[in-house]
Image (cartoon, rainbow, N blue to C red; front, side, top):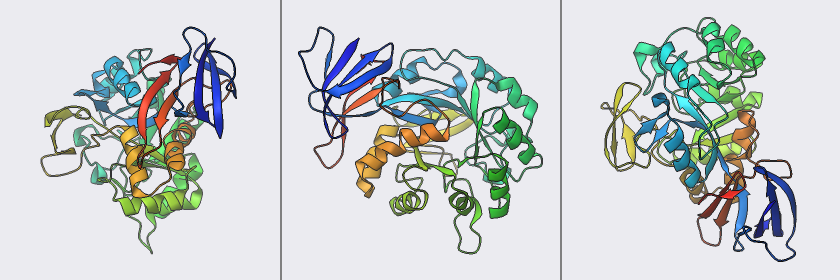
Length: 362
């Protein structure tokens, strides 16, 4: 039994006891610490972040099929659970990624998020058009059980049948890279889809007579992913999404790719050249190609836009975990002992420590 003591949690100074990578109990601070216990230094304890849409970092990518170095980088930067996210790729490449070992040091990897390949060519964004293909439920079955989340365009022929089958398998289905109408998206939610992939990006905008996928998600009480770097979505629209979806339905994601945490330069992303310059990752034609910051930095930017820290943290922990049906993103007896130590005394929160599986990680 290891204790994390002298932390602020739930309105007081607490001691969090941890065993076997889980939280055993939470109580008022009492007694002298034992050897090996962790001094929280009076910092705020919040759950480890949960990134359900993240491709790569440090020049590495999910499609490489080697998660170890990326998992360590994520954990050091506050993300203790993540879903490695594929690009739209050929089936054999997706099968290779889904077969790759996920029991690695660093952030937990409960499964894979398939971003495509069943998406709209007209909204492909930085995805490889050569790999886009019609919905194929047999392909999804071949990628299970590793594949736990999938992005699909619901207007494609056979998409609703695919969504129903995926939902029956326990896969969380999210709508993205789509030109779907409001009615088509509502039908997808009725069939079992539960969220939007990177809300506002690679989909029709919110129009007062054509509410589109965003209006459908709000009307149906679905979740919305949001890339909160201030570039993919303007700060005013981040606030609009927060107020429209609510803290329990808006999930912050990084959608970061190979260049995250790496120097400016040229990188490969799903067979396409991506250019990182001044923190922006773009294709040669200027198309945004993913994010270059961590989920923790997304949280900080959400706070800088005017969202209270407690709400921003929930949108990067419990909310994405619920959207993807993951056991993560909370601190409670029986839950995972993945905890961040945060200095919240300044205008923006500062990450001071990471507890992963009940051990001090950074």
